[in-house]
Length: 241
Image (cartoon, rainbow, N blue to C red; front, side, top):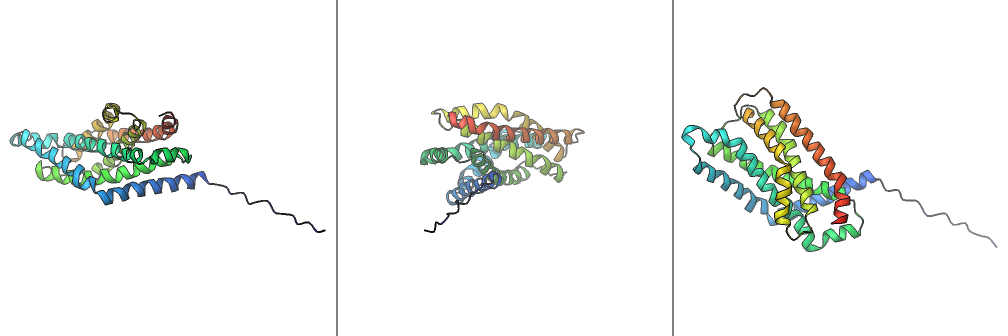
């Protein structure tokens, strides 16, 4: 009697790098699709930022040049306040739908989930920043003197703000007081970014500073460290949450 030797089943090797990249793409696309359908950033967050600029435009004295002097700081404070809403909303959607628990049960790579949400948050913040930038040009009568310097600090500052806000939103997503706990954790942590970005924007909008690129390096380094720590800590912290 002939015996047939069955070949062993093929071994499927999963590439952790490609798996991580796929998770990042899927999560980022999902969050941006939700934003495209709801238009919360366009209809609520961006108008809130413009309203903050308008209120300060009336509160401060434009005749003494106060508006132009405070424009960089007000810009970054408004961006930071906007990021509180985008970060909390991102994980509130997951919690309310039960998706976060499903992600845990499916043993998905939480680093990829975090990176995807950070990428989506960055895209939304860029839109808010573009609207606010036009707002300070119109309301505060400022003119950019160094566009390269603006972009050089805005890019890492946006990544740092999005990464830290998203990370703390993930950590506090299971708390009843998450709306209070998130800003209490987020705002002190992001202070170095606000300080550095404001100093660079002051130079980019016409106030000479010799240490502008040193501040750019500081903000960039802070963004890299923040993102690295968030990726390192998100898995164990979410498992415990």
